[in-house]
Amino acid sequence: MTMKKIQDKYITYGMVVIAYVLCEILMRTGIMSSHIKGLLVPMCYYAIVAVGLNLCVGILGELSLGHAGFMCVGAYTSALFSFAMEDVIPTVPRFIMALIIGVAFSTLFGFLIGIPVLRLKGDYLAIVTLAFGEIIKNIFNAVYLGIDDAGLHISLKDMSSMGMDPSGKILINGAQGITGTPSDANFTIAAFLLLASLFVVQNLINSRDGRAIMAIRDNRIAAESNGINITKYKMFAFTISAAIAGTAGVLFSHNISTLTATSQYFGYNASILILVYVVLGGIGNIRGSVIAAVILYLLPELLRGLSDYRMLIYSIVLIVMMLFNWAPKAREFREKHFAFLNKRKEAR
Image (tube, rainbow, N blue to C red; front, side, top):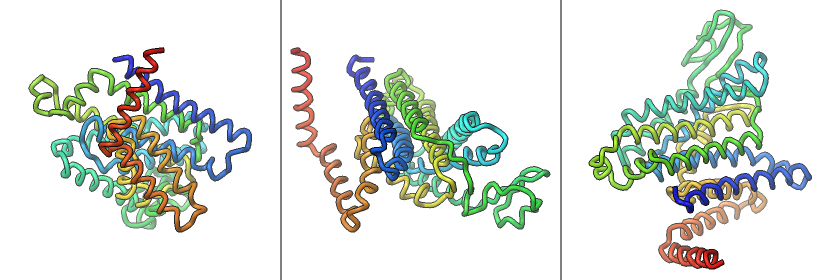
């Protein structure tokens, strides 16, 4: 690993830590409003899922529109465990176990979906992963699950067809989801999981496996001719990406009181929004994904007071960020500017 890559990695960690410390100071001093406090955890889990998607899109080079589906799997499986064990296991170990379960199921689904899906590429891969996300969302909307002394009861019709004892507990109530999920997540946990996701992805990128994955992205035929196992590394990257999306889902489900598989959170629009974070932050730029997710998530919320002009300003910011990241003149300006700064540092 070169010195520049090491510096970039620790700069990213440092930015997250500094942002966390500043937010904690503002919260403890009472300067931060309750509205902004409520946005901190969502800001973190959207940054996490953007990091995971960038691993798939930017590092592996495969376009996936199903990461909202993996997020949904992590959210529901972890919330189901926490809800069922709320009165049995204390808060901290319950959340840790829920996190492990959510990530494990997301990883499993990533592996199972990756077996047939990664044979495709380009638009075909995007369409199939998009279909997966929609299928997962609709399945959770159709499931009725309950528990009583006789065990688990499940139905795809309604609660009355489950044959459950009236004294039993409804776990998933169809489209109404899971009501009363424990709110175990907080900003500290969210920031820690964001750092953990960054640590996994950035160390993977700078490892031997990461270089093999990027070789596949750059030239599949050349990579295969050099003995790189294409299927193995594509599956490896895709599965880790799904696991990171599942981590975001665990945070999501433990930050709200009622979990429902709505289109707003787990549908097509959610997948596109996450992809927007990745594209505007820079495809393959992990730090950029975090910055873009933070800015683009907070901006509409901070502009709510402007009413009709809120989305207009949001759209203008999107266009400006896109031009700054991808316009040839802007990229040339950035390269010259940063090259000048680096020369000054070396001279000192």
